[in-house]
Length: 157
Length: 396
Image (cartoon, rainbow over all chains, first blue to last red; front, top):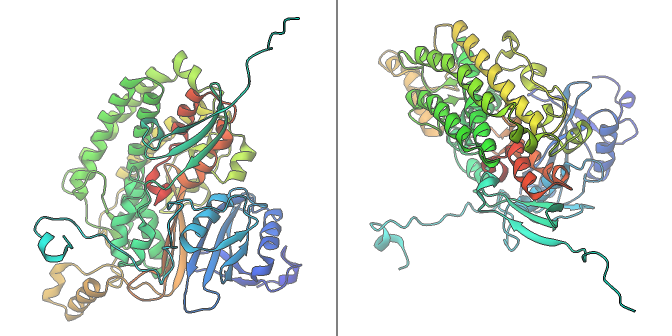
């Protein structure tokens, strides 16, 4: 591992570098420096914004781990940025326009708020949907199948 | 003094297109602001096909997830299977037999052919050329017949599994596959005869839906959309997986960045895919198609008679399912629509912590508003078609 200070994110505190099992290097960063790191990454050549998603772990106070996947066409490699948050994070839309729908999706399904997003509304679920279903403590939910043979057994009618 | 009002009053009209509109390729809804026939703004509204697949995957075993990957991009089921299998295999770090690797390339390219045939047909149909659709669906059926014979299903194949393939090909399948591949190039000549130099087709596509290389990069599009804007980025060449570096094929690009350029790219890819399939068929080695790693694939039934261990593996496999080691992985592949990858995370138990699909259509659709600005509403239909969104993977 080379000297972190010499890398492009050198100005930012608390960047932890982790090699990935899948060969994609990832940087763990404090949530306060989220947008700064993304901007620095963009300036370092990671121009393509590929993906943004979250992983929920309700057992931790900062339950959401937000992951961003970037690609550098010049270096031909991917980079993963990750941070944890309890529910609010700076939006990356000012840096990467492509983050727009991805952040809306994470807001919709996890309930993470992205501050500074131009239009943070639900994207996949109806606007009046009450919950954020991709949270781990959200029940799966189901609809009873209306077979005539089971109607008398488990249906309310 | 008489005054006459000068010119018509300028006002815009908001109209709703979809979600039940045949040319939107599924349940895409667009909110349009029109000035006469010209599009001032276009806002895609998605989610009408949201089925909570990612949530469902988390509630089931790793093997169940395979069956759901089919249903994401339903024109590219084997490509989805492949992307998911590669990610899970990365967690296991298991060795895949050579025959399975070559077979995967063959199947991935056959699905690309299937997907692009549907695209050429529906694209032409959207522009009013119905007969092309009939031709391409005739040939697509040949490819689907191959899938059906091999996996039992025309579309929802679930054939590529972590550790290899579900089974080997049936007897004579490769011969029939070769027969289909021999027929296809002539058929593509037919489509090209109908479209490529057709003045009406060109009038509807040349210069329509422009996407510059910089914009394409910024909006995060991939696949034929990116290559149609002049960026020769194809994961099969840039980051080869499944041994793509051993195949002789070229990356199709076009520089114009319009609907016609994307047509050229896809027709080119169709021909290249046929070449890759033919190479895969000639080099297809013998041997098993399932890994010998018993943590990933259950042992063959014949082993039960002799080996207690095989019986234990079988039992564990079917009661607990796959148990990938703790970790995360993302392995992208080049789907017919662009960079497709599954982000998977395991905590070592039989159920995934998170499976997220990086869906190419989702990112590509984000580019639609910038491509349609100032275009006519009839052009919008052509543009949606060349984005080639599959709403199954957009909405998941």
